[in-house]
Length: 127
Image: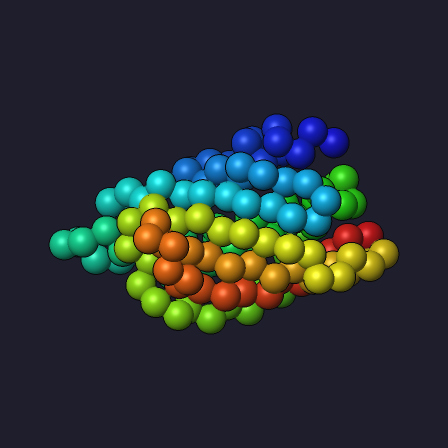
């Protein structure tokens, strides 16, 4: 499976502008350039929670795809929002467990100033 092409061709992630920048050996990184349309605040660019969640979910899935070499539908994801996501965002994900049926991934989402804005754990279908 061409992992890079798979994530470049994901319609919803593309719509939001999510780019998976690294994806290998159970680790993935990705970024999102903040745009007015993605903000919940009309006076200042602040990421809507759904945007932050989608970045975490996409990058989390990419980390697992790097191990199983197939699409991994999300079963469940829990996210804690720690701060406002102002400006561009980036995420880093690491696989915690990769089983034959289910995989678990931890994801951290950061603002452009390197402030941790969200912490998530995703569970994905691997088999």
